[in-house]
Every structure is written in structure tokens, then in C-alpha cells.
Length: 227
Length: 227
Image 1: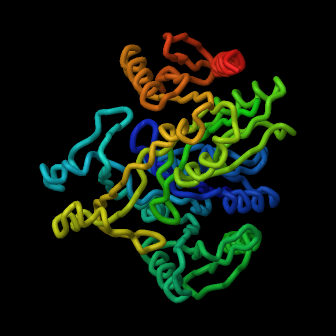
Image 2: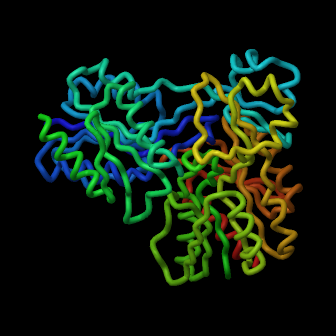
């Protein structure tokens, strides 16, 4: 099978020296990729410069991206060519549009400010406070089944310090909204070096696993059983 | 001699999953550290998790930090123990204080908003625009000579697509304001893989160099000649 995996976190530029980054080591995507490669599948891994990566392998194609806009472009091309997608990348939900001194808030309306852009390559200021306007990015996961209705779609939901019930409710809602086959639901506070508690949630219910290796193995089984 | 080097770029958290990062590979700091180690000096390198680092060496001490606040704490301890500091780290000049929906701008004054903080571990929103308030960070370079008046201080100034005159003027002003012995002035647009144009600026004038190795060699000569 041809498996598409995304890992790491996107970065959205504020200017040419600064950006907003979603933290993600890429370790889970690497583990999932290795599991499929060991079992003789073809893997395309869309990831970032700093993310952890599997060793080179003749069945592995690496695509390095940085921004949500890069990801959107690459996914649109790759989704139709693959049988399953494991979308574990931490994707920025907002991207910077304009940064300015806080004093500008008194001179212009919010509507005026969000239509401005910075012309500087490095935004500099001596004021004590600045304000950064951000715009929602496209929800890529919601587009995947439109690009390829028959792809097996595994999405991820990461929350921080919520109840088990809230985590599962949010995962189920994402399952429906994005027409995903599985959502892997996890809580950052439950992820440590050798431990990764997660729920594998599908329309029938959920299954709990406790490590990155177990998540990878479970996703491997679900995808190959489905095929 | 005991040489303190900073490299990489700091990251300031927006919440537990996102942060603002100043981009810097750490390659220059690594090259400078290697030059001093090869010449039997002791090096303390303050850097970040993702920055490039020299190989382990019995005269090399690594200190890994993430935020401006980490850096401030470590520098205050280390500056008095060293003979020279090469401060090449890209330090965040602003840190997030509060992120909210743009609609809050109509309900509260900017003064009220900058005194708020987010209680969420992961700030979530469904609105099209958000606004992030940021506060100036302490200028660490300006504190170095207060902590150790006899340390040889080398600072850096990175601008983007400015004229040579502007770059030199800004460097000279930083030299005076921070009581630095040398400012290395460089323009991001003049830095490529194998090329790194920079001016070594001191009270007597400036000298132009064209690679990371040449910058490291020149800083090595200046520091050892001064001692």
C-alpha cells in the first residue's frame, strides 16, 4: 500500500527572522513510518526541517515543508496518490497578518488593522507592547476526503489537561466533521519520553494505547485490515 | 581563557503547544566554539535543543535553554566566570502576554487587555481573526558589562536588506549603548550556505569578512590579542 504520513509542526512567519511554531518532535510520525516500511509498504513522509526522521529507505519519500500554505499545496497533490493518510502534523491554526505598536489600536479600527501588512523584512520597535493580528488558516483535514473520497483518513486531536470525556467528545466531533475513519486523541500532559497515552477513536468506539510503538502498531493493523 | 558563547534562537511560549521562535541554526556559534576548542581554550556554549552543536569535547560545557527568561538567569551566573562573551544567539525581543478573539478589542481598552493572561493550556478559538499582545523582553546585552565590567563583549546585529551605511550606523550605536568591544554586523540577505558577509565593528572602524570560518578566526584573533 501507499501510505502518506505528516509529522512535525508547521511554522508561520511573522517576518524574515521570527515565526510562530507548533511544537512537535516528529517522533510519532517517524515511528509510524518505520512500522510501515518494515512491513514493505511505500511511505511518503511530509515533515519539517527540524523534525525527527526515519533513516533513508528505498521505499521512503521525504517531502520537507515549513508553512500551512506549503502543506496545503503538497497535500492536494499527494492525497489522490495514496491509500491511507496518517495526519499527525501539528498544523498552525492561525497565521500572522500584521504586527504593530499597541498605540495604533487607538488610531485605527480592528477592521482597518487586519487589512494591513508589514513592509519591513524585520519588524522593529522600541515600544513596550506590540500587537500581532492573526488570521485563521484553512483546515486541511477537512479537505482530505474531498481530494480523495476513498482514502483511509487518520487524524489527530491534541488537547492539554482536559478530562477523558472532553477528549473523547472532541475526537468524535472531529471524526464526523472531517469524515475521518479514525481520530487518535491524546492529551499533552499524558505524553512523556517513554509513555504516550492515546485513544484510537472510530465510529464504533475507542481503544486505549500507551506508547508511540503501540499507536503505530494499532494504526498499522487498522489500515491493513481495512484494505 | 574561558570563553562564553551563545547560539541558536530563543522561543517564547504562546501556550503549551505554540511559541514564537527566532530562527537561527546555531552554525556560527558552533564554528566559533570549535575555533576556541582547537586552540585549547575552555568554552561554555549556551544554546537551544534544536541548534547545531560542536561534538562533545573535554573543554566544552553545554547549557541548553529555551526562553529569554532562561537565558537571563544563566547569563547572570555565567558572565562573571568568563573572560570573553560572544553573544550570537537570536534573542526574542517580545514575549506573548495575552491572546484573544479580535472582538475583545471592542469591549476592553488596550491597557486592560495587556494586563490579562490566558488560563488555557491550549488557546482555542473558532473566530476568523485573533490578536496577540506582546511585551518587550529585557535587553540582555545591555546588562553584560554591569555583571562583569572586565569581560570582553562581542555582540551581534542582524538586519535584513538594509544599506551598508545603515547596518554600520546601527552597529556603532549598539557598540556605544551596550559598552560592547565589538559588534558583528550582518544582513540576512547576505548570508547563504557557504557565504556569510559581516562587518567586525569596533571603536576604531570596521573590517569586512565573508564566511563563518573567517568570522570565527577574526574573533579568535581579536580576543586573544586583547588578553
